[in-house]
Length: 77
Ligand SMILES: [Zn+2]
Image (tube, rainbow, N blue to C red):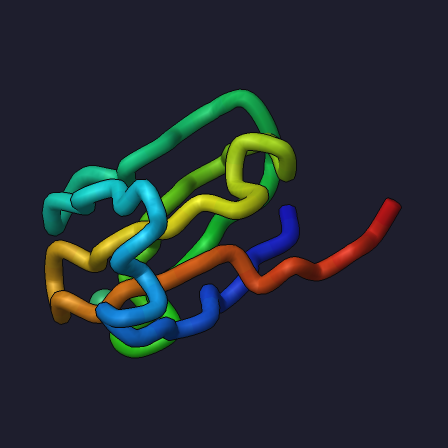
């Protein structure tokens, strides 16, 4: 299953986004696919086994390190 490191963005860049609040130990989304996304700073798994379309454009604040992550926009279709 593919695993990706997410891209870190600044709080300013996230200000207009709909930010998901991650809690350490619990992924913000889980299931529905085979892609796992990790925090770009501390490598905590933020989304586990999700479908690509469920991760696309998502912005997540890491509950462990507090960094704001977004999906890396890889393309494999
Ligand atoms: Zn983190």
